Image (cartoon, rainbow, N blue to C red):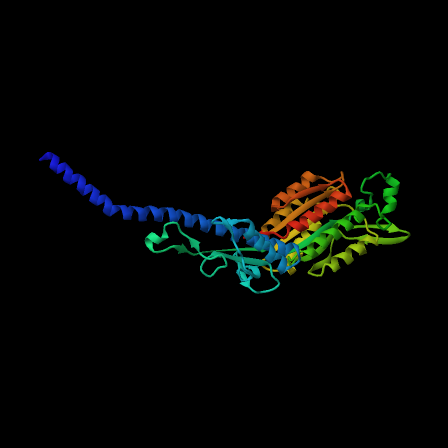
Length: 377
């Protein structure tokens, strides 16, 4: 009797297993396919993200070349696989627009609005896409042999306002490598900057900076402030006076205005001590009076010496930080204090760079200009 019962029980288990087996297979197949779908979606998401960044970066660095940006995005799709195959991005999946900063600090993208500073990629594997939908391993078991996935990502670069705050103290007329005696230094105060002077080296570096900005798609406004000290002296029996700071060119998208003012300084007589605080303050007040709302505000401050007139610049840097202004500082010559200017930059979240020679100075200005075309996800 016991043996008969065991046989019945074994038979029931076999029947139950036969009933449950298809269900177990469906569950197992769904688990495998679900993991595969998640992997595929992630691969599509990565391509959308990388493609948007590559396109926006290309757009910024080529001055708005849409065709080059499209090519950069498509290359990302062809060199990154989805489900073992490259992903085809079509022109209509690469959307250009304009991102603008809102009052709460976020960015709103308006598709189609020019000038373009934003790219949105809509990457997909679907019935409507060039590569078709994703295919499942066990989809036939539960009536869904394929699946669609669409992933979208955007990348933009920011508009900004930049004020160059440049040292025009008397020492900027000294040679880059200073080997002048005191009599020659005094004589140069009543002369225009000579070809080997620090000012001429700065002029060339600023010209390179402006060329980099011209080549980008960032719609920047640039202003120019110079600083020295309130001073006067007689040059060839003519009394000349200089002020501690001056707004030489207000914020403007016409970069030729900056070039013209740099040329003007290069052909005129000036002198004085070094009041870095006055230069930074002049720039901050101009941002307050004429700066635009909801754009990044940056000061690039260069000096070849030590602050030696009145209150130091650190307090002014704190005021800039409170106003959302970032200061990048540059020291030029052994007479400057990189440590003091580092403190000014640190107070606002900016950077400090030191240039021992003209070649390095130009590289610093070019690097800064390139870094301003920052991508925003």
